[in-house]
Each structure stands twice: as C-alpha cells, then as structure tokens.
Length: 159
Image (cartoon, rainbow, N blue to C red; front, top):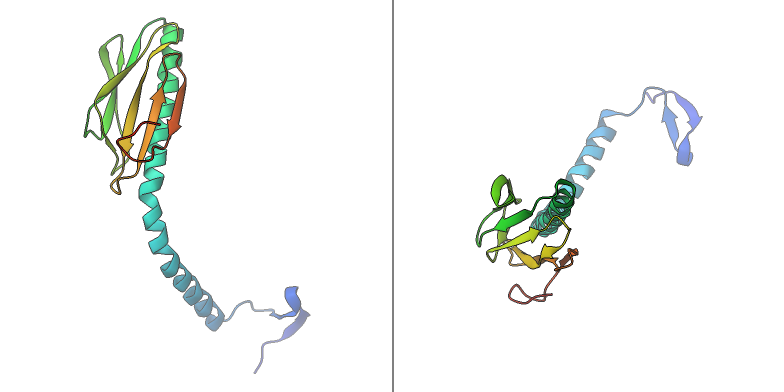
C-alpha cells in the first residue's frame, strides 16, 4: 500500500506524512560515501601546501607581535631559528622567553635571528620554510621593520 500523500511539496515532488523511507536514506548515504571517497585523495594532497602557508602566516603574525612588544615594553625582542628545526624561539632582551612549534612536516632551511629594537626597527633577515614536498615560503623582515611573506621560484633563491 502506498503512503498517504498530502500534495506536491517543493520541486513538484509528492511529500509523505511519514518522512523519508529507509531506501531513500540508504541511497543518500551511498551517494555521500561515493562523493567523499572521490574527494578525499584530493584533499590530502592539499594538506602540505596548507601547512606551509599556515606556518608562514604564523611566523609573520608572531613577528608583528614581538615588534609591537619591543616598542611597548621598550626592550629588544628576537626571533631565533635553526636550520632543520621544527620550532623557533622568541627571546626577550637576548634571554629565552618561549619556544613555539611549526606545523608537522615544515622545516626551517637556514639558521638566523631577527631582532626588533625598542624603536620598531629590525635587523633584517628572512625565515626560509620548506614542506615535505619541497615547496617553499619565506617570511622577510626589512631593516625598517616591514614583514611580508613571499614565494620564491625555488628554495635556494630569495624573493
């Protein structure tokens, strides 16, 4: 026996008073599963690139923060980083203050230190980052204190 009909609903389809049938729910879940299985491999290849961009923005934000702290506290701040490391250190007046990790799969390519004076100027340098797929980003700090993120043509070049 057919379910009682109440007339045409949205899109011109008949709507049942009782809701969806088990067959409709299983069909919807099957369609969702197929679409997820097709999309998932594409999403996993995007993850390393996302982590690289995210870590560059994280460093850029951290550099802006310590630049402002150097001015507001009238004391020098530094960001120190080591080649091959998966983290970086922030120093307050050349004394260790905190260490922060980078996202998984991101490494620093060259050792260095970026310093901010109480006047907001900086000892210009760049942090070179690379992910597991050898894509690179650089966080560049000019001597005037300008902080920017760029993408070099390859990891050995500057931008």
